[in-house]
Length: 290
Length: 312
Image 1 (cartoon, helix red, strand yellow):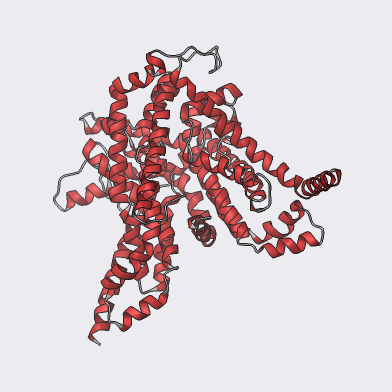
Image 2 (tube, chains in turn brown, green):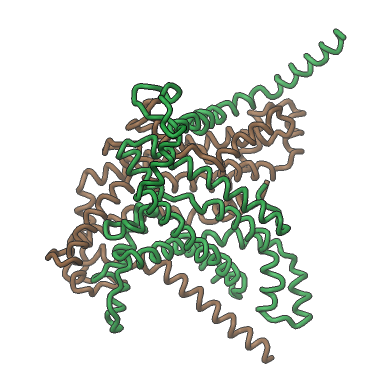
């Protein structure tokens, strides 16, 4: 009896730590959301904590009326859709043939692909190659060069392996070729991993900015994250000035900054709960060694 | 003789008839790897040559000092030496503070007695992994602002001085590490939680009969069950000790903390892509890649000597 009581105390302590963890994960987002919806005077007086004060959607109106911003949002959405389509095609084309154990050269292809995971030429050789290929400042540079992730390819291959060979063999006896088998057996059975990897590729593209920073000078093709970075850093320089004693009022820029952050976060918050049940199984697959 | 040849040829023809489509499929990703992963490797020779915009890498003249001119220049460049130090420092702190964090969290989640609450905690803890470093930097700048940030407002109300989380080099380093943990700790538990499901439940039943308490269960059953996973991830982390992320330090840095936030990837970006010193930065990149491979191989060998499985 005494023992079970002590266990219960332990359980409650663990639950308490988990509650703290949840708060640490969510409070920053709530705080920024509250700031984005508050009026400037409360922000300057440091009164906005987790709930908006002096309801104010001006910042969102300002951000939405900025054509630079709406274009960037639309362009990043288009880019993300294209990237997911290209990347998933490449990943399937790479993973599927490699599950045929009697494919000649399979070992060679596997080694060749895995080697790129451990050794990379580095940033500058890639930059110079894109320059020679004419990809610099071309929208394709944001789509093609990183369209295939070896890690995600391995996740997909591991999933394909989990589909019993007997299924494939019986289709072969019925006269189906590899392409037919891919479309009628493997892809329909792989929906969870297809959803997971699409999500991973989409998040990667939506969140990515370093390729655009390095290889794309044309601001029209800058994804949303890079625009966001410029907005945030314009504000930072003001803040540093105030800290060093210059007079300045960061109030308005503060709400705009908050609203911009919320805008770039919301798409992810919307898709997250829907895809969550898939990506956990996908990420676990990646953990298994081939 | 002739008969065997025709059989062989028939076998080849049958094989190709069956599998030609697989080679067609594979040709596209293989072409991708050749063009975007292997051809850049031929550009590595620029590290040993004087870069010239009008020549191909094969035609460029060799650099001085037996071709090692730019490696020597790099190690005489103060910016590079600082970048090297900062990369090692930040990665080392990430390793000692960030590596154990998901293990501890996974153990906590494993011990959590309320299944629905466990799922909620997991859902919320995975979320930060899906935010970009730019967004996290935006959140952090608002949260940690010296006068108007939530954290410092609380500190002030409790009677403490404001802490310059992002504007002072020493504080910045720890904020950087903390934000890394914040983003990835939940996500990184997935792999450990998967490993935990492979532990034989009979072990816990037996230990319950023996009257083992929670700590004994963790120490004698759970942690040994996680051992192979921990070692695999540790090898990979050690292999990454000199690799440097770009997004994270670039997004989080500001002019006040450049002395600690400039890592190798940022050095390469500033000197190479913005400064056009291609030979120097290719040399730096090659040094980094080679050291990464050496560390990975060494860590793997070491793990195998300790009786672990290793990563290959």
